[in-house]
Amino acid sequence: MSEVPEELKIKQKFPNWYDWLKPIKQKDLKHGFASYIALPKQVDSEFFKMPFGDVERDVFSEDWKLPENWKEIILDAFKETLEKNRAFKVFMDICVRCGACADKCHYYIGTGDPKNMPVMRAETVRSVYRYYFTIGGKLFGKWAGARPLDENVIKEWYYYLYQCSLCRRCSLFCPYGIDTAEVVWWARRMLSRIGLNQRFMCISIEASARTGNHLGLYAGGMAGSIEQGLSELKDITGFDLHTYINKPGADVLFVAPSADYFATPHWYVMLGYLLLFNELEERYGLTVTWSTYASEGGNFGTFHSYEAAQLLNSKIYKEAERLGVKFIIGGECGHMWRDKHQFINTMNNPPKHAEWRKFWDDPDLGQISEKLKGINLGEFISGEHGWIHILELVAALIKHKKIDIDPSRNDHWKATYHDPCNVARGMGMLEEPRYVLRNVMNYFYDMPEHCIREKTYCCAAGGGMLAEELMELRMRGVMPRMMALRYVVKKYGVNIMLTPCAIDKAQFPVAVEYWKIPVEIGGPMEMVGNALVLTAFGEKPEDRKYDLRGTPIREEE
Figure 1 (cartoon, rainbow, N blue to C red):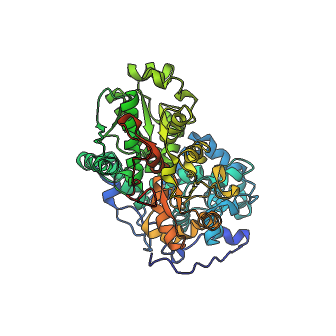
Figure 2 (cartoon, rainbow, N blue to C red):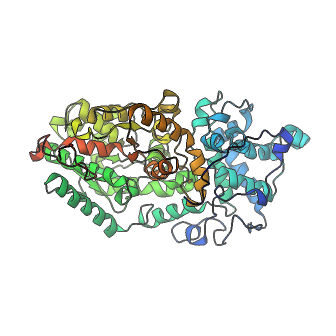
């Protein structure tokens, strides 16, 4: 936290059009805002190899060691993108620079930098498009808002395209529906063609390609973590619980973000998963397996390029087919759900084994247990391409009275809920988490309407922005969410903010410390685990003495 000033000053600037067309120079790149460039060990490895990845580059060096024909490579990549991606071409042409998106970006609100307005961030790319690919730009140059490529333009691209978390809040307010996150995504892909890849993101991509998860955990470490969780649950519940890992013939493959295996507060969500799966097996015979091959639900490739995203998510369908499962449950991860809801089925063929095909002909859980009949996964928002969100499943189990809940076990918590960008805007799951929380807790309060559900503010750390070197940008960008959180803390006495996103859970503990807001951070499945009565094991509502954090549930204890 030492690199972030105690007091943040926001200086808004309003340059004229022609001043704006001038790219920033090397001296304008600031610590706390500039992403480190990936090292060869991340982008020239056996498992993840990018063009010109064998060169070590320093973002704060004058010489970025670009390949000799870098301009030709960028323009070829630009032309390819225009030809293959119709949406990108449309987004290049239809923006009228109305500014409706400007104050919707958390980074612009927090920095005041005009090039952090979504429209201007996209204009850094559009100006090059106009110069090389439109008649007006070729004829009139800067008078048409066009500018030629030079090394300073490339540096500006890298600097500002990696000050975007791809949250898509701006797109919600755009009257033309321009998806600026998609513009940024494809432009990042162009940069990767000349060896400019963000380091933090590529550390995770390479690790996931090599081991199956972002943390680089091998099979023993992952299995050991889950066993540790079962041991902790024995202390909390008194029951000997179990789980399956790499089990052929299981009903379900469960995929979590790898942070849930070790990080805090993610760990308490992991305990919630294990409790639910044990109850469902004991009560209904539904078997859930984890996988050490497909051990990561998140996909940092979705922040980098289409090819990187496809490389990482291909493992999960392969593993579902190898194990012969009927469907996949995904855990609490934000960008995982944009990937699995919007991308995976176009990037990879779904499983074709008999068990999968038979189940999805009529995806009712009654196929697994007659007692679960009526819960049809085909009706779920997440019920596409064989994937089910854990919270949507829990909502259905509660609605159909298939699990027993004691909300008083969470009476020591007063909660609010942060909608992760990719869960809310990326897949449209808005009410199910709230339905779950209102059933497993007695004290739940939403933040103001203008900053929740599809209008949610980003945590300011997604899209690869969780990097340590970006701490000042992160603390500035998270300000809108922190102000809304402070409001419900003061009004309702909220003492925990819940979010089903691994990056949120990593960002918010740092943010609330910086912004001096006295709340804890957690995930909805932690509250589900607290409230879940293990009826199949003989547990009664009053039996549980401690919550998943080891905190006494009732004051007298």
